[in-house]
Image 1: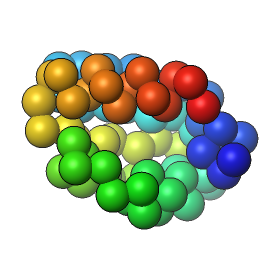
Image 2: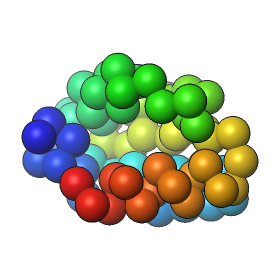
Image 3: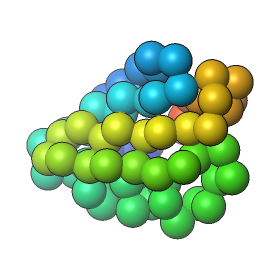
Image 4: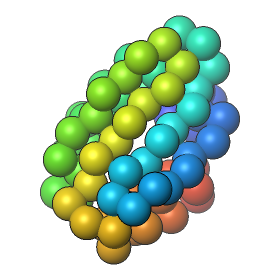
Amino acid sequence: SKFASSVLSVSRAENILVIRTYPGEAQGTAAVIDGMNFVEILGTVAGDDTIICITKDIQAAEKIKELMDKQ
């Protein structure tokens, strides 16, 4: 998948996920995440190789991280 082939790591800080990608891959990967329409995710912000993903709460962040780790 686009997600699995682009993501290097997913880390959590409270209700924020920090997703590291290969250079130039963050914006496309964030678009894939946005397109999944997870109700737990309030929004994403992408740079060149890093995505900040804001979730509703800590439990939502844990759930989404677990899903991403399985990809």
